[in-house]
Image (cartoon, rainbow, N blue to C red; front, side, top):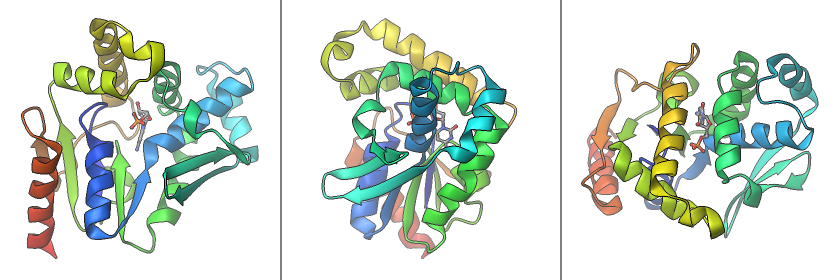
Length: 217
Ligand code: DC
């Protein structure tokens, strides 16, 4: 099962609930791009330095571990879960995700998690590239004001009181980059069900997806 879509469309909340309802594993692929961004920052590289980033990847280790309080992400054995959701890492993840070497490197990492089936995977290119033969594909979208408001709620501490307009600008810049990059851009798969969540509750979205899935299985 794949759920693709832009930032703030509600993918994570919906994917987690869908995974619980189906008894499936939840795979947050954005966290993997964020982990690469975290590593790039921790070694002091520029997120624009494609060559150095590509050279660094083979020595990097990333792992995801499902625990009772959620999925934990480790980079080179260190738990970085709580450092991945900042606006800085969001922007850097979007930058490094445009590099072919980064996408190639993460491809087998994602497929390994999905190979046994029973996974709800969320990201940008899961239905188009990572899992093209998924049993059901969704593309979750929402208007930019709704998405900025939701993203604001995800932020913590001082970041949460950032002006909504700034969050909106950050989201628009990131979407623009994710949609226009040369490889694996953010687009719905031809066989994906597109859902606009602007006026829907989480439960309504999940119910709609469950309906589609039930019709397919
Ligand atoms: O879903 P997210 O906000 O955690 O993703 C962070 C960035 O990672 C996003 O701006 C683009 C990139 N990404 C991607 O290119 N492909 C994916 N499958 C998931 C995320």
